[in-house]
Length: 524
View 1 (cartoon, one colour):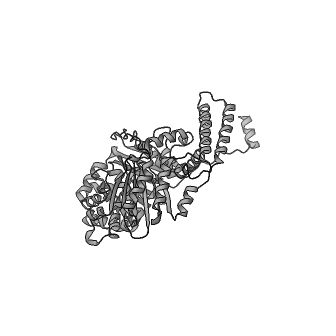
View 2 (cartoon, rainbow, N blue to C red):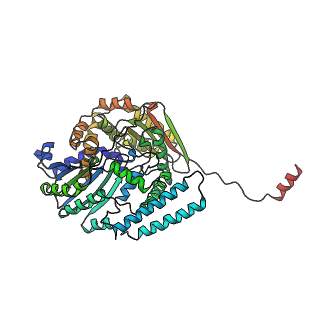
């Protein structure tokens, strides 16, 4: 996915923990120590980390599994494969989604053999078109044969019959996440289903699903002016780091990567030591731990993947992209910033809130309310990812007959104010109070808490950082905001991108010349 609305407040979700604790412990005991009493961290022998939180508010539980791999781990030729594997995880297992697994596996192998032969001919220096057609026919026949063994959507149907809800997953630049919720008496069902789809993934309907992902790219990027602009903006902003790559992948890669590529990707990154699962709700940890050992312990340990080597070099030039398009104008400006684990991340959170949280925010008051030059304006940190140094972005949609240059100047004025004028104490207090209140309301669920704990365990290596982040947010000062603004918002650290409305040219006349024109031509 190129741009998610939830990215606007991704790391403010730390505040939600207050609500989660309040629902389970007395007000006098709302601290880390009391929360730890209800939390068990259990690491299997194969390296898989489980965090179990007993929260017996209702007879249900939720889980979130985060695999520490996203599009940042992809290399040219396989962009989009992390997202593709997310899709494949819903296709079932060797026990689910098939009428005859042994026969199906042979059929899938035949599909891959046929596709590899087709690719080899297509990518040869002088492809034989007749042979390509022959190989395409063989590939289609192999797919039809493999399709005979498929039981569609059986994994999801089992979850539904067990009373499950919110079955879904996501992929971004940093991680791949899987989650749903079940009744409290379905703990073993969870352990069986989730361990099974990671123990022995089946690449059933792989190329058919690859077509689905291609359509996602067409819908979300190629047919969306802002989607196309963001892709170009990231490609210009990151000259080396893989954050420049779209999570959905480039179309040529989506038309080329194979089952063989997917198997290698899974073998490298889907190892237990690279995965975290958080379970929150009406669970009994003493009963649950043996189930985790039995089911998830079956997954081979594997070798931990190496860390990402490529680092983005320090920016040395301002970059400006202008994209002509017969669409609504759109303006965005980005600045390179540190990773979410940097001590200054809470300051960027404060900057976002002061600039763009609600109708009292600076960007709304200035651009939308007072000057009336934009119909919307906002900012966000940690784009397109959080784990590595990323971008802080502000954007605006110009009002009718207003140019991108006008909104750009207004945004620049507000950014300069952050550098030259200390923000008021009232703004800081609103940020701290308002953010806590809104996020407590939005994530008082088992599902929200599970995702937050999984995120912090994955990015920081310790779920307790969720508490410490709250303390760091409370410690942000006006001086911090001014210091970070001065260190971040400078010309050679800036990347601008805009859509300029282009009126399609009238097509040239195709009418036949008139008799008068013929006469004039002849007499000249």
